[in-house]
Image (cartoon, rainbow, N blue to C red; front, side):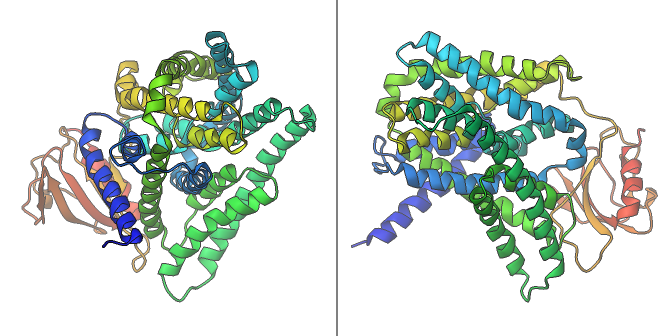
Length: 490
């Protein structure tokens, strides 16, 4: 007879593996991968074929928060500060003004369409879905939309990584109003907001500096301990910031930015590890959220859920973006794209567990409506991002952009050298030339060429073809010269 632990391990591992393998197929048809995990979670739930009865909202909330802080930290690590700093004010406008306007506009629309929900309940629902979701946005940009202008990607990523503080604040305000908390006052909530943002920013910055110092100065006896150290640092930053009444989500995101923009030991190895770790957390989080949902209840709220989702996508979000970016020098087509990429995902679902935890009468209904809105957002917005970008004409290739990118090569023994991938343009002057005919700097070596599904170990007589992916090991100071050589037009 199979014991309970073995059975649970079998079911969970099978569910995760099957979700991962299925995501590859669905992604080819343009569906966001995270939507697949939500769907499999629903199928495995009490109303689905899996019949797994899971209704622990507090545990799901904890799992969601734990996963989200790592998602935000990794997003900060991978952010390119030089590309963002010139547009920081735009990101701040979107994360604060845009989020507040989204909540208020959507709250008014919800009450007008569904008067059975009072003003406060409508604004609470609008607040829960007001913040864009970092997990969904970062995932979409990692698996697609790679030809977007870099500043546009970074603006959207910064907004999704920093607006959770505002979403939490708005949700807390309207929950207190609904429960008629006698201690409520406008000043207290203003103070709460200021403390959340300022303490979160200061703790994130100081903790990021501290992590960098410890990583580069403390010599640990085993290389794997550096991975353990930085992994343990993320929940520590969140917890300490929360204790001091700051926003832990904001703190871990800023700490990630501070750490990621500087050099530290085993940087590439840590990036690779955290990428895999975050994928595991995302899969577990979305499967867990799917288990909480009862599809039979969704059947009763799909009409209001669909209407609210459409209003959010086509009206509330665009109005909030254009108002918050009034007089900001961005093309209209970029503002329209920012309006479209307002994905909802883990953050709203986590916030939707708060009313249930507080015992609100409408808690379960609000959770299922929010879940349906998330499904609509991922299905409609997420799957159409590439098409919308093409329609708006913003997928233009920058002629000055680098045609190479660093590979997962953690160079410790040979400082100053980098392994890079170069994509050979079809109209490059090096096409059909043998490697010995291409004048490359002495401090460079062609290690491998990928052509279609073939991998070639090159010799001097190997000819370069358009579309080849060439791996080059070279000194950092000569890499720009190599890039120009391959980019030169015939």
